[in-house]
Length: 199
Image (cartoon, rainbow, N blue to C red; front, side):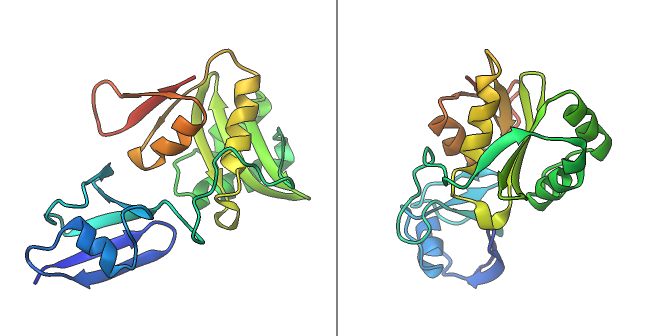
C-alpha cells in the first residue's frame, strides 16, 4: 500500500495510504474532492484523474472553494489599484514572499522607483502586488485571505492598461488565471515545464 505525500496548495500537507492500483481520482476522493473541484499536479504538470499513481509526492490545486468557482473577472468592490510608493516596499516584499515567489528586495525597490510596481489595497492595507520589468510581469501575488476575490485580475488589468504588450512566464497551475485575462498561452523555449503568456 503506497504512501503519497500530498500538498493541498494553501492548506498544508498530509500523507495518504492508498491501494497499489489507486488512481489520481482516488487520491482526490480520499481528500473529499472531485476532479471538478481540484487538480493533481506532479512536478508542476496536471495529471489525468484516471492515471495510476506513480509519484510519491503530489500537489493538489483547488479549483472550487465554498461550493462555487469564483468568476476570475469579478473584482471585490473594495479593491483599489495604484502605483506603489517607496513606503510600500516592505508590504510588497511581504506579499511576494508570502506567495513563495522569488524577488530580490533591491530589485523590487528599483522597480518601484521606475513605476513598475502596482499594489492592490483595501482601505490602508496592501492585499496584493504586481512587479513588472518593462512589459514583463516578474511577480504577481495576493495575500492569502484575499485570494479568489479578483485582486490578481485587478492588478494585471491595471498593468495592461499602461502597456501595448504584456508577457509573463508561470507554472501550469496558474494557467487558467492568465487565460481568463486574455493571455495567449504557449510553452517556454526551451521547454522547462513552465508556460508563457502574452496579451
